Image (cartoon, rainbow, N blue to C red):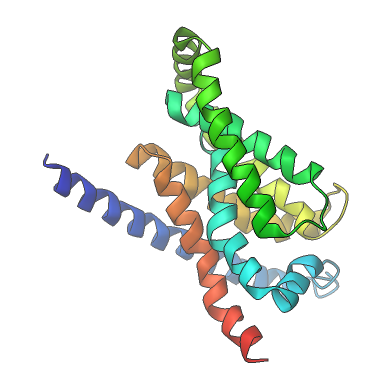
Length: 228
C-alpha cells in the first residue's frame, strides 16, 4: 500500500472512530436523561468543575492551550504510550511522568508559559539521556512483555484515565455513584483513544483524537467566554 493511501486510511479511521465515540456519548446522555427522570432525587449538581471554569473565565487562552494541546499530549503520553509500545513511546512515557512531577513541584505562581517551556526543554534532554543510559535490550524486552498483555493495558488504561478525572470535581480522591456517572464519558473516550492507537499504530493518532474531543468543548464555550 502506498504511503499516501495508508495515511488516507488512517485519517478515515480516525474520523470513523471519532464518530463512533460521539455516538457512544449520545447514547450515554440518553440513558442519563432516562436515569434522571426515573430517579429525580439524584443530585447531579452536587459536583462542579469549579477550577476548570474559573480558569476558563480568567485565562481563556491558557485553558485553550491546556485542553487542545497540553492535555492530549501529556495524558496520551501517560495512558496510551505503553499500549503496544515502541522504544520511542516508552521513553516518551517516562518523560511525561517526569513532566507531571515537575509541574507539581514548581510553584503555581510561576508564569505558565515559562514553566512549561523550561520543563519541555529539560525533558528533551531527559529523552536523549534515557536512550543513552538504558540498554536497548531492556527496551526490547519491555516492549515484548507489554505487547503480550496489550488488552489488559488497553482496558485498564481507559478505566484509570476516567478515574483520574475525578479530580476535576473534587480535591481528594473519592467515589460515589454520581461521580462515577460524571467520569464515565472519559472511560468511553479512553477506550476509543486506545482503539485508534492500536489500529493506526502510532501515538500521534490518540493525541489528535483527544485534541478533537477537547476542541469540541472549546468551540462551544470559548467564544461565549471571550464575548463576555
